Image (cartoon, rainbow, N blue to C red):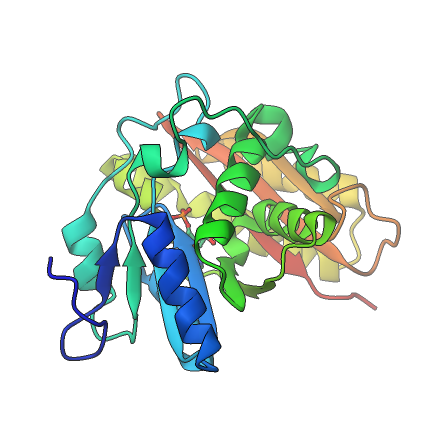
Length: 292
Ligand code: AMP
């Protein structure tokens, strides 16, 4: 790929060197341009594209990073089989107004002898943090490293990974990283399944049963508005998932900022689910509007 200036005619410029990326972003900002950043692990789908389009609409230049981050996968997780589809990813964002694609090699992000990690407590403690030890430390570490390479004005994350957005916001606040965090809505398949790079792992039968996750979130919303208590709603979500053969890691209603039990039975709630179909683990969530 030629290192041409990214524009609509030539497509984005592909950059692999973090220092080069840093230089280009700072140069754009020094010309008064607002720079948006969308960090991804590639295998781009319409969910990612929605973040990219929002960044391009709100900013003068947009960076999309593609990096399958080894440190956020636990032993036995899907790091080696995670889809790597750079050419298709470049095509997926063609025409979306992306200036740069940042696709570093692993040793550009984690240099030989690498010994530094970012550890977030608080919102990282429960749910994904409990079930995937080290996951959020890997996320916080790579996001911090990427923010060093891409000193953007604003970075875009998906509400699909709700707990991750809380962890990133806390890391940015605690370390004083000078970037705004924008959270964008979850994009779904027509049947409600949240788009995810991991949906590609699902066998046909698992794919049809995976709709139970979104169904459970909708069921939770109806029960929430009917005035049911939290324990009863959580039980109903778990029953529906189990009935469709989804192995439940958690199905909970918690405070959407702290992920702790609700302090008010009517406001700031979110329903969150993680479940497994065969070897595929999926997560989803749905914020619950204030009830009367
Ligand atoms: P990933 O490549 O899975 O690390 O995701 C990169 C970014 O895209 C993260 O901020 C995700 O939350 C976001 N994302 C993933 N799936 C969706 C979706 N279905 N809708 C909106 N954003 C998403």
